[in-house]
Every structure is written in structure tokens, then in C-alpha cells.
View 1 (tube, rainbow, N blue to C red):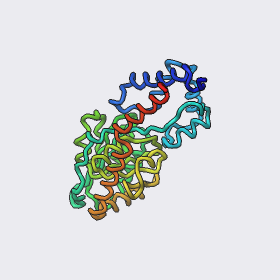
View 2 (cartoon, rainbow, N blue to C red):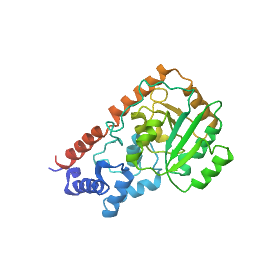
View 3 (spheres, helix red, strand yellow):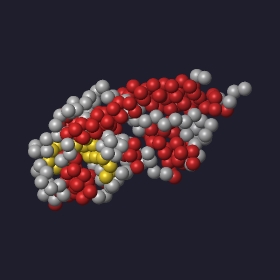
View 4 (spheres, one colour):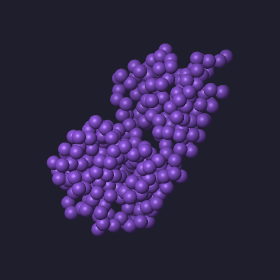
Length: 287
């Protein structure tokens, strides 16, 4: 006898999700699960109504590993096949070019953030931390556009950082490599974050990473092993952490780089994600 979850209606749900993913660009682009579910909901409100109700009840910035637990709590049918498949990047494209390269603190330290200019990204706190760096010759570049541009420029001017902090605007993903290549340190000091592919890209290219303790970022970085986690809204602590990294021995720095690169390659590589997606849908559509 056919099980309820193997019914035509159940398979239709998976087909709609596959179609939604394809309509949004397939695996070629960076696609958020929320975008896929929104598209599926537009096509079939009856089958995906549970999703809209779920997202009214909890924030969309939960770590991915907690997402299924919360979704079940707020109505996701447990009879539906469920699995966490993490976002991914092409590690062959984002190659490690910094392994073994000395972190020379005597030169200008290049610090980078890729984020839309929105309060949720904690950029005001990050800029404030830059103003608290002592005896550090640095240049901080923020890639991204958004509604907070004028306010952030005001903060930069108030802290007399206009010669050290640059807002360069939107940069297409295919043109972002030179920024990673130049960077010594990548900072993602968000107030809330679901998951950050830019952190993966930086780690894959051997750039040291510092993130906040916003929920999702804990899945990007293993504190002290693949990067560093600093409590959010604490710019003084962020400044001290950056200073400690700059003064760290090259042996320790290269170990962090290697650990981060290996973790991204083993857990967040695009080829691995594709295998999981194919396996997941084949098992549930064609069994």
C-alpha cells in the first residue's frame, strides 16, 4: 500500500520546489531557501500555506541546523522528508592564495566586509571598532549598497575615518576576487545573520575571518579554530580582537587559514551540495 508521503500530492510539492529553484537560477547563483519557498507559495498557496504561517512565528535568521526544529514546532508535517542542506560555494573558483604568506603587521592591514548597507549588518559598530584600533595602519573596505549609505558616511566623518574607511558600493560577484585577494582580514559583525556565503568565500581564499555571535554566523566559524567570534554590539572588543590577530604568530595564523579552508571544502563545497540535493529529491520523488 502506498504511504501518504509517497502520494502524488506529496511528490507534487517536491516538483514545485525544484521548479522554483530552477526559476530562480538553479545552482549557478546564490539562492536563499526563503526565496524558493516564496516562489513555491506564489504558485500553490494551498500546499505551501504552512510555510507562511511558520515564518510569521519565528525569525528568518535562525541557524540552519535549528530551522527544521522550529519549522516542525510551528506546523511542518513530520511525514514529509526533511533534511538540512547547507548553502555552498565553488571552492575551485575561490582558491586559497594566502597559505604561507606572512601576515606583515608593519604594512597597511586590509580589512574587508561584503554586506548590504542595512542596520542588521552591524556596520556602524564595525566602523566604530575601526576608530578604536590603536597603532594599527589599516584600510577598511565595505562592498555593498543600501539605504544606510548616508548615515554610515556620517559616522565615518564623525570618527575622522574618511581616509581609512571606503564604501565602494555594489560589486558583482564575478568582480569581487581582487578585493578578497587584497584583504588580510574579513569582518562580518552582523546583529542578525542566517548564514553568510561571503564568509565562506573569504575563508576559501585564505582570508582570516572575524564574525559576531549573531546566531547563523556560529555555523560559518568555529571560534579559535577557523576564525574568531566576538559578541555583537561590542566595538571595543572587536577592536581588541583585531589587534590580537595582527600580532599573532604566522604559524598560528596559517593553521587557522588551513582549518578554515578545509572546513569550507569538506562541508560547504558546491559539488557536495549538488550531490545532497540530487540524492534528496531522487529518494523522495522516484522511490
